[in-house]
Every structure is written in C-alpha cells, then in structure tokens.
Length: 221
Image (tube, rainbow, N blue to C red; front, side, top):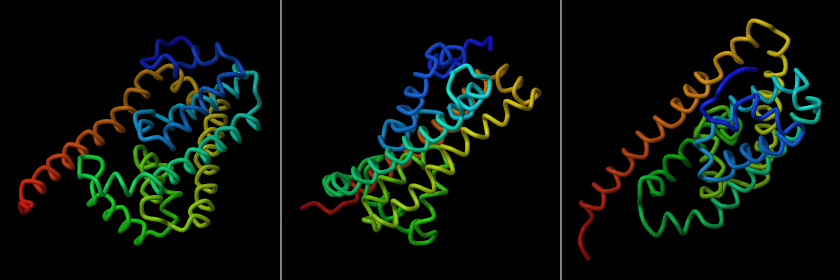
C-alpha cells in the first residue's frame, strides 16, 4: 500500500506498522466517535473499511474474528458513555444556556425524531456520520428508557462496528475494489471528512444564529 494519506493515523501503511496494536488505535477512535462530542470529526466508516482490508491481507497479524468484535465492543461502550453523559450532564447544559450545539430546540427536535422513528433510530444513527456521535447523548438527554436504549445500542454497534469492518475484509478478496480503495485512500478520506464536517459546520452556524436571534427577541426581565 503506497499512499501518503492526509490523516497519517488512517494511512493503511502507517496503521499496519503497529501490527496487532493497531486495533487499539481503531477502537479508541471508534469509542471517541460514538461516545465523545469531539468524535464527530473522525471518518469512522473509512477507518473500519481500512481495518477490514488490513486484516484480510494479514498486515495486522490479527484475525477478523478478533478485530471486528473488538471494534463492535468499543462502539457499544462509546454509545453507553454518550448516553450517560447526556442523561447526567446534558439537561444542566441545556438549562443553562442556548448555543449552536447546546440548545433546547435541539433537544426538542431530537426527542421528536426518536418519538417518530422509535428506539430503532439508535441503530440507524450508527450509519450516519455526525448523527452517531450525537444520538447517544440526545437519547440520554431525552431520558430514553435505558434498557431499551442499551438493547438497540448493542444491535447498532454490532451491525456497524462488526458489519462495516467485515465488509472491508470481504472487499480484500475483490482485487479491483481493493486496489481502488488502496490507491485512492487519500481522496476517500478527504471525501469522508468533507461529507462529515461541512454539513456539521453549516448546521452549527445555523443553530448559532438561530440562538442569537432567539436571545435578541427574548423579553427583558
């Protein structure tokens, strides 16, 4: 794999240098993306595909049956942490002030989304960049039933964490597709980040200006 990836830690060659320990890096990124607010900047789907490819080529010296379940567990634990943060800390943040990210309107919209699509939205959110970062926190803020949330969190973590990694593993057996992914990993990563970050920035700017307008029209005490 000869490529100078934009994100060095996601470059297949660079990742392969760590051997079996690379899975710890992957799990840390997956955990952060699904459990911490800062995680929305990571292109998780691409990382899972790359990990699957590396396991198929034995670059990590780790079987897929170890790598994929480890990633699924990291995704599950991240989702649990996100829910805990949302349930314990979220309400106080939203009650304190409105901002681009933390606004009462955001909570209301998220609760309406969960009411409309049910707890199954937790599963679907796993496959949508940015949304998979905020959904667990929003579920906690909205006080979704914990047992129901955890059940869907397990299903989503396995479907996404195990499933996408295994997809990358299968791609490794299809030479034309494998070659395309390896050859154009830079462009794939750039596209993944652009698709993730640009809509997020637009969304946050809209929320920021909306919050400022709401504050400007609020009656004075």
